[in-house]
Length: 123
Image (cartoon, rainbow, N blue to C red; front, side, top):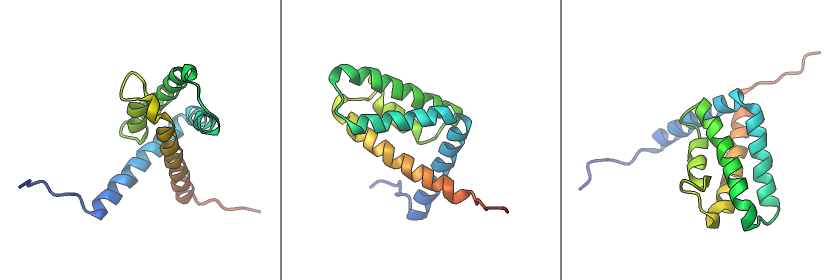
């Protein structure tokens, strides 16, 4: 038997919130790189990517992800950098899937960021 127990739902929620906070910090530190990542991901998902373009796009995207993660280690960008970079675990067969998942995480991150900031109109 394994003495290690699986984390409960509250522990998983705490970890998720912690990762989102670190990711938000990374985005705040490097907003231009974040915008570039969003543009690259949308471009990849909007059209077919030729194999000749894959390595350049994947390297550019992984470089941006690495920069964001460097400004706040432990962010969600670490996972995507590791799994998109061709010189690491990145694989052309899973590139679009990883970009789709990254886009979904970006969407959740943007929702998280909006929920934390109360914006009021002052007249």
